[in-house]
Amino acid sequence: MVDINARRRAGRAVAGLLAVDGLAHVYWATGLTWPAPDQRALSLAVIGAVVSFAPRVVLPLALVLFGAGAAVLARAYGRGGRLAGLVSLAVAAGLLVRGLVGLVWALGVGDGAGPVFYWLNLLLYTPLCLGFGWLSATRVVTFRARPRAEVTVPDGCGRALTPDRPDRVNPLREEFLRDR
Image (cartoon, rainbow, N blue to C red; front, side, top):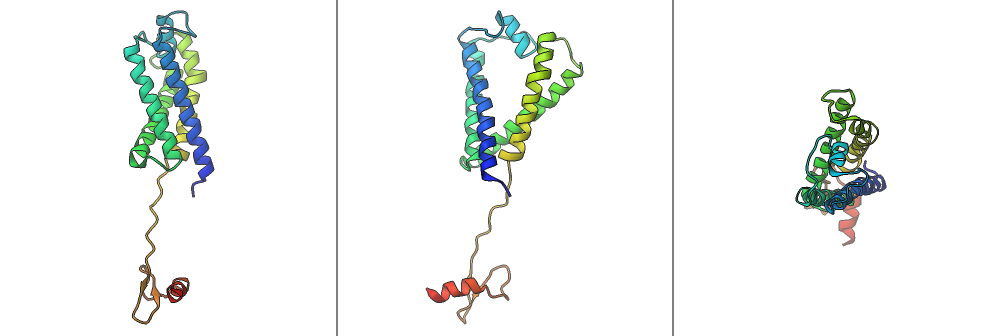
């Protein structure tokens, strides 16, 4: 059984993380590089490689992050349908994969990004990705069987028979049909 309040809290937390990340991308799209002194240092600290932080690169990423956050929040509140469920699944999978790759990087495999990225990855990126990925996977992305439609069929004698056991009379349904 899914605790609806835990699901909503988890959805708000994951959506909040994605929104903060999206806001950081919008901030960097302005040309500001805080917390790094320049764009190259920012790139090495955040990604571990030298890449562009031009608006044409970071604004689409911000939009994807905001959209994913909205989908996760919608899923947590039982809205958004199948699309919100698929996006939430992709967010959970993406965070968990990034967290696992971060563990590999923390062990020194593919090391070459420098000490700033190493420590940010070890102390910030990897724990956040693993924690929020697990939270999203276990609380937000839950698959539950759809409830069966409960149909009662009155037989010729005025009794209500249940569809899964036509030989058994459901007394509650029988009373309901009699009172109508």
